[in-house]
Image 1 (tube, rainbow, N blue to C red):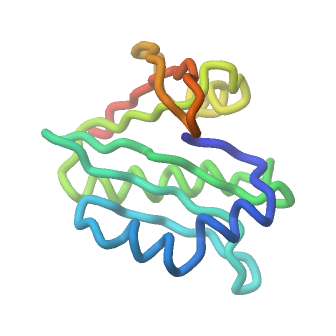
Image 2: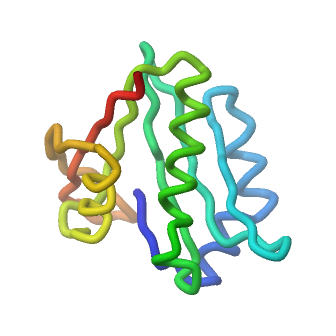
Image 3: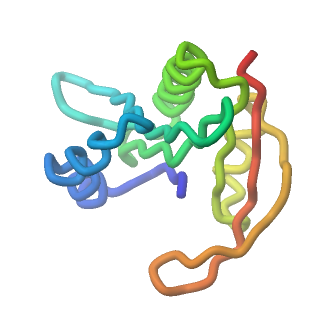
Length: 135
C-alpha cells in the first residue's frame, strides 16, 4: 500500500538489506530510491504485471522529507522505468480512507478505476484503485 509520512523505523524496516534482497530477487520488480546527503529518504516500488502494465506497489517518503516533491520525483522515475520496459499503464492501490494519497495520485494524473477489499495485516481494508496511462 502506498503511504507518505513514514516514520524512520518503518523506512528502516522496509529498506533493510534483507527486505530489499527479497524484493529485488524478482525480475519483475523495480525500486527507485531518493537520497539526501547519502541517506535514504524514500523509495518507490513497481511490479510489472501481466500484459504491458505496471503496479506501483508503494511510495514511501520519510516524514521529514514529505511535502518537498520527493514522492512526485520518485513516481516520475518509477513511471519512466516502467515505460522503458514497455508498460503502457500503471495502477496503484491505496486505502480508500487515505485522502492524502488519493489526492496525490490524482494530482499526478491517475484516475479512479475501482474499489476492492483486501486483507492487510489480518484486517480487511477498503482499497481505492487508480490508474494512469504511460504512453
